[in-house]
Amino acid sequence: MTCRLTWEKPPDDAYLPGVEKAAVSVMPDRRLSDGERDLLRVINKEQARALDVPSLNDTQLTLDARIAESEELLLSLGVKGQLELAQQGTDHPNVRRELVIRPFRQLLEDALGNQTEEIGFENLFGAEEMDANRDYIRQLNADFDAVHELDALDVIIPALAGTLSGAVDCALGGFMTGGGGVRTPNAMSQFVRELFDKALPAETIKKLEDIAKVPYDALNYDNRGNVIVGTIVEGLSPIFHHEVSLAHDPILGFVFGTLDMMHGTVTTLDFNGHFVIQAAEGFSDRKAQEVFEALATVFLHMLSDVNGSSSAKNGGMGLPAPFMALFSELQFGRFGDTETIAELVKSMFYQGYDFRHFCSMSIPGMITEVIVRVSYFAKRLHEGYSVSEATPVGLSHTKKPKLATTLFIGHSASTAMNAAKVAFTQNPLNINYPQWLAFARYSVEQLQWALIDKPALRDQYVRSAINDEWNQLSTRVDSLWGDVSYQSGCSARRPLDAS
Image (spheres, helix red, strand yellow):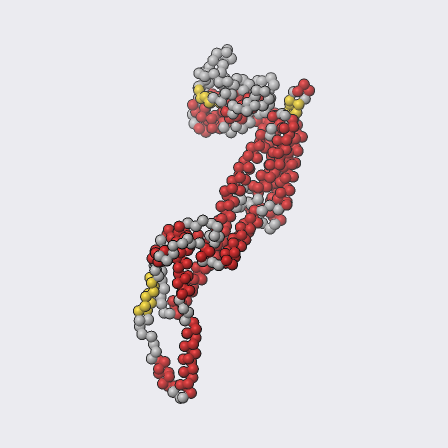
């Protein structure tokens, strides 16, 4: 007997959604796609067909028993030789048999001809099976959540870290009000300013000023009072030109400063929110020949300005805090009687809220970062993770579970204390700008994690677990088919282009 198997791969639009997604989507609450419904209809139809086929097991057992009894009777009558001769003549004739697996579309057409009602998993599974499926999915979700669930220490440590850094900010950060209502930098800011004075004394600043001359140091007027720009820019003065000139921003300056160096221009965003690019007479010839020269000059010029001026009696104005110039676009809000947000930021810069103060206000945030990350590292090592797995670098929730969330907790606590301090003192100079930037960053990441990334990763985890079981089932089915083909003398083979 020979046996031939022909196999046709179901089309992708029916095969993939059915096999992979139906295996995953065991919950009836999920809306099914058309491809999934088609596969369920086929499975339902073939399941009903299989139940209608009578079993031959009992008949086969009865027949085997009768044959055995007959053989024993013949042996008892002494006809062993004739029996053996009869058994030798019972070979099956060489009959060609063909097993054909029907195409999926043909199976679907057959199923659609008998099913007009809506189809769902409840048509294939009983109530107990559906409950078991729900429990299994819930367990997989719980297993995923357990990896990212915070325990008591994961909450307490960052909360204490944020409280400590907030206390440092309240006690030592910001500005303090002295006699006559004069506001002066607090201890933390004074400490950082002393470090800048040691690193960049007046003589060093003078050398840097001579080396790094730039076109965007131009003002509205020259020393004789003559206008040297085409458009008068409000704020392009000795006191405020660092704030309105975008090339003086510690971060944006590397972009706009380089462009100004290449074109001999000065790019400004004035106090009215007007963006202007123009050349200044007597400054436009300060150009760089290539990008690297421009970048180097911009950096050296920032060094010459970050700690004030070598010629100013009071040390001069330093560089603004990062992105401070962009607040000039916020021409709304009311602080006090007349100040908008833009006017408030201008006033803060005038009173000393510059890059040096920004650096000092970064210390509380650094305290939070160090405590949270070090405690995360120690705790993960204690839990048995490797050094690479415990190293608190990177914020991927997949590779570093809980780290970003604990940092968010720490910075939230510190930011809340700073908000209380500003509200209590009614002094905007006490706003911890670096702390609020950190809080904004971690808030966005935490929101993205909670609303987008976590549900997607949970779904991926559940699908992966069920697909693993599906692959095991597929392997067992292939093994069973191979065994049946071997025992029946058939040679089962799939075409090479079928997957």
